Length: 260
Image 1 (cartoon, rainbow, N blue to C red):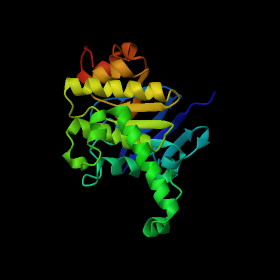
Image 2 (spheres, rainbow, N blue to C red; image 1 turned 90 degrees about the vertical axis):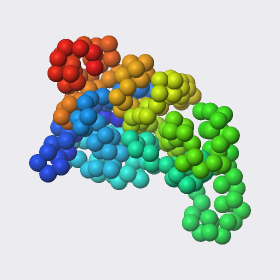
Image 3 (cartoon, rainbow, N blue to C red; image 1 turned 30 degrees about the vertical axis):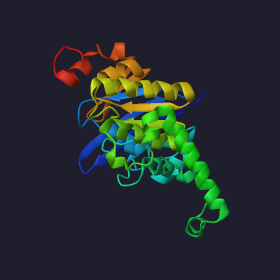
């Protein structure tokens, strides 16, 4: 059976710097893949490659068996890849509900002129989108439902992170990419995040996920498999219990023996 996503010898250069070098990786349907490595190792660059933000210098990206190298980001989103970012990318002065509805835009059939003239078709579709967005917020947290008419900027940091995941899920992806979702969270909030991810797995058992995270408790408890990259190269691939003891991983993180 084909992988949900597979990269073969994926390479990108920025000037004289090779940011990703011949990286072979894959993720299966229903699998949570942890992607870890020291700062500047190429983790976010890898996500930017597979979402079409960057075009590789060499190599292949196979998504559901199709080579998608060179497709722009909006085409990759339409094919079923959705993501969050390291830095908050919410529309801060729009409501919580509007932010989630924006995540559904490429699934909607209304054209720009429908929205301008607000015909019956456009009104009906907007109503359906608002209902689906509210259901998605409720799936995560009743607090988000209660705050759905607040501006996103008024939410606490942890709720803004959860809202970003909601918006990514609103696109109904088959591959979800989370870039440091626990950034800025305290241990209790991180625990809620892990519960959210488990709920996503339970609701959409066939969705694949790639999670970049520096909080090893998230990777240890959530990831089925972990890939470690350093200086753009894969140095380990396997269960957390295995890769956390590999000398190359310990050297990359600490320069000495110890747990990453």
